[in-house]
Image (cartoon, rainbow, N blue to C red):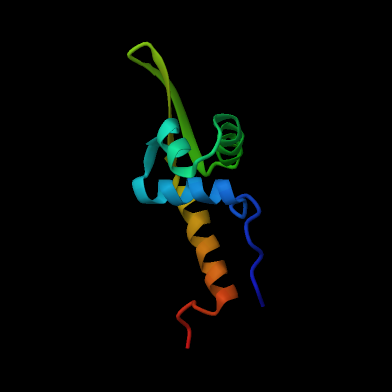
Length: 98
């Protein structure tokens, strides 16, 4: 009847990160931290979890002698996010099916 919700995306902060990346495709760690109002430590842990399952790619480099971390949503991440949204719509009865 109801589809199981992806436990990776069911976390508030991970869902917020994915929602941001769905909209912009790629963002710097500091931008994500500011938008989610998360601590750097907590965000780092959640980004790592998203990376481990293949939902995002993380690139680390230096820009003007400062470390820069960029997160990019993957095709697998887009697919997982869309499936999550569809599952939520089914729970809410708003899937568009009459």
